[in-house]
Image 1: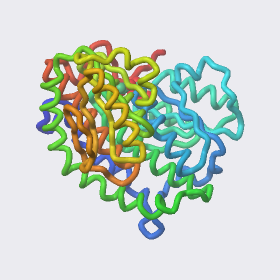
Image 2: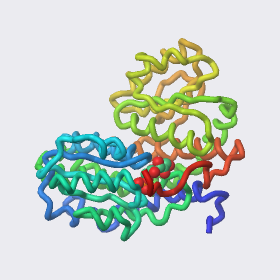
Image 3: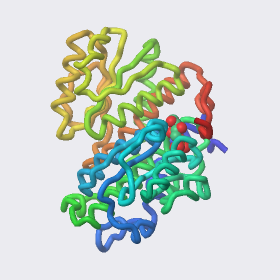
Image 4: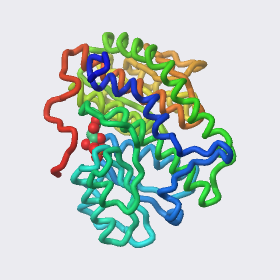
Length: 360
Ligand code: F6R
């Protein structure tokens, strides 16, 4: 069942190249370079988007917000479902809600859908489990097609959500006539190349994760830092480490560090930074210099060609534009996985957690 892997989580991390390919199947038009999502054809292009989700799916939603704004020009809010349901949000007919849920059974996300529908908003469900409650209750459903996810910690489901959000941002951008020309020409070939590139990179990433977890296994707490698209990834990296290795970790927007958490930095409080070679690289680099000046140890996930002088640089392939995420995410997952396994934790069934949270 585990296909030769020690845990389902590891198997599911290694399935991600296939998950991306499956999520793309039938959804790319090579002749036009466009994303094809027939489910969305009859909906008007949204003027405003609310993304509603919990946990890892919420992090996927935060990531999606950047693309919805940049590629489709749609004002987008991302809401923690358990917060939205008890607010009185400015939400009504004409608004579109995207509910993201792997299981399609998360109680708070369903409550968000009910609230949206009661106010006359349209609901698009992004979910993995066919026939689930989210799929039945949404006006329109897009399946992430990741296959069953057995490990409690979500990995490949997030990868599939990000793939689908990328396609949605392309489709909405085209519909609204604002898709940047570079995205229109480069995104589709880059997406198609991704599965093979990730497949080739994963074994080396696992090896690096094994080495690094042994160096940092004594740490009681980690700070994960990222900016832009890497901010939601920092949150996700911290969540993965907490939930399966039981090491405290906090994800932070790198620019927020000097507004408080920098007080915590000392040689025993390591920082795991996301520092891809994108437009924000110089900013993250200077944040890391601030960490190092206070004696903090740094692991930095970056790309070949970076000039970071940190304790443990970790280079992963860059990918085109935002697609670099698809290399960063598995590195974060593998670091948490290897740490939990090294510490002898029950990786697939972490304590106190259930795969689907059907009560609030
Ligand atoms: C973390 C994890 C949870 C889920 C959350 C939402 O690894 O699995 O944070 O992401 O409970 O679940 P879904 O996506 O099923 O609504």
